[in-house]
Image 1: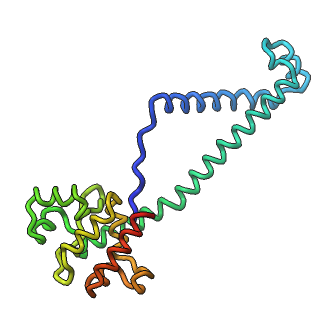
Image 2 (image 1 turned 30 degrees about the vertical axis):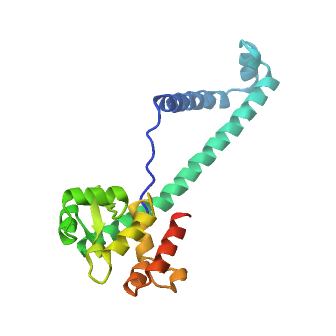
Image 3 (image 1 turned 90 degrees about the horizontal axis):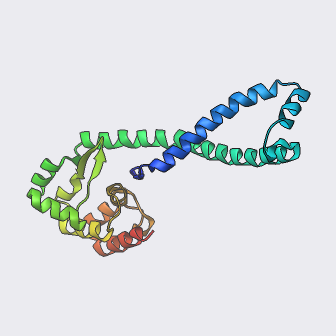
Amino acid sequence: MSNAAVREKPSTSTVATVQRFLSTVEDLSRSASKVEVMPKEVFLEGLAGTKGNLGDPARLQKHISLLAERIKQIQEKLHEKAVERRVLVPQRHRAEVAMEKLVKQGELLPPGPFAERIHFTRQALRKALKAGRVFFLEVKGDRFFPAFFAEPRYERKQLEQVSRLMGELPGSAKWQFFVTPKGSLEGVTPLDALAKGQYSTVRTAAESFAQR
């Protein structure tokens, strides 16, 4: 699972600009609906009586064409966002369900039980996190740590070094690295490769993974 990218909150000026645009669209829509049903002669008479260069039909037509192009670009952005939601929202839901299942199965542990299993104090756990030697995943806003760090079939120091090699990658990315079969490891997961004593090969795979 990959966590959703953390987005910065929009600035006050950005929000104000969008609000002005939306208000303008509403006003334009109301006015356009009235102009649309006007007889052509009435509309042209009204246009002739307006002030400013847009009173010229040719200028107004050009202005509307430019506006229509900009509206089209905005529509494309909205369409892309709608498609993104249709695709990503179900994916995120499936990923969340999968993570919740891992918690129930004991493959992801809360901080307290995790620290106890690997004989860490809270301070030691904080240091390991800061150094990148261990990592966590967020499930419904809470932190959970991979239980494989406490499994006897792995050398924990090797797990910690592989995690550290992947630097500041999010915990979800590190998790996927450890549990996903890789061609460079003859089709097995890095966890299975470590269990077979292939530490050097896993290190190389981790370095390559972190550089993508």
